[in-house]
Length: 136
Image 1 (cartoon, rainbow, N blue to C red):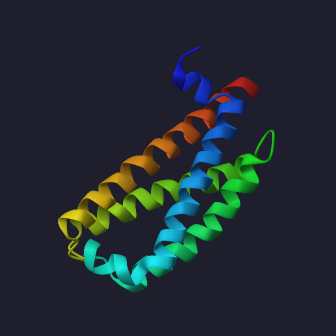
Image 2: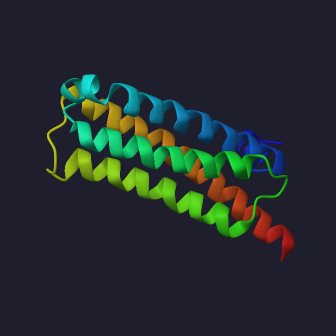
């Protein structure tokens, strides 16, 4: 079994969901606890970092709840995946949209966020499609 196949199996999906919840909680904690300190380093507004930390807490609760279930409900898993792809889009808008002026460190932070979240979303999407094909 390939790495992708193992990560998109039912057990692998639960592991990916746990990784998503853990990384999201780390990012939420970072944004909430250190927004004021991070803002000048990243060139991102303090309010944006704080707000994203709060949104991430809700996201982490959903990811954690889904990770606890042997077979996550498709609708909630789809919601989580859409949220991940929206996060990637938001990172790209912040990076290229001219809305903010991130520092070089902030640009790197946004790229790392976008790539990591995209990988998690793609693994979740692939697992969802595999389960859909298996039940069809």
